[in-house]
Length: 188
Ligand code: FE
Ligand code: ZN
Ligand code: FE
Ligand code: FE
Image (cartoon, rainbow, N blue to C red; front, side, top):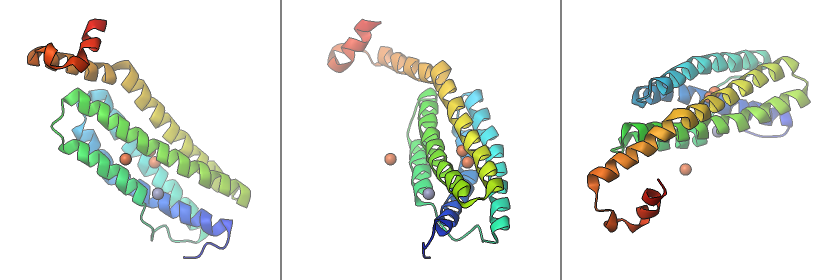
């Protein structure tokens, strides 16, 4: 495809986002299934529903533009999801896996926020007021999802993951063999 104008770039970036959202539609149920904490499961399941709405907004925008939504693969989202999948293959403690899933999901949300921020600004410049509003709504939702993950991590999940490490340490014992951990133990 040729990028001869900001409009071309706008459509290209929208296609990238459309493909990214559709990849997430498949990945989010797997992340919900892998999560242990009920609040994290709920957050992923809720964002799955939000994601459906975001795809509908993009459908509306493409229809208005008279363009096809398909034809582009978001390799970045593919990579982010691939990394999340690698986590699921690890032999991880449940709360540590939860913390890891949050870290993955926040990378995804930030990637989306960057993408939607750009297309929202392009829409504004190009005079697509309705699209600008739709894209801003989605941008806000991605920001809310990111904030929710931060809240969950900081209020409970990171703490549970940290406690998990302590338990293992007690079981394994000889602390002397792990001089690197001594400081952390002494601090408590
Ligand atoms: Fe999204
Ligand atoms: Zn992309
Ligand atoms: Fe990476
Ligand atoms: Fe999202």
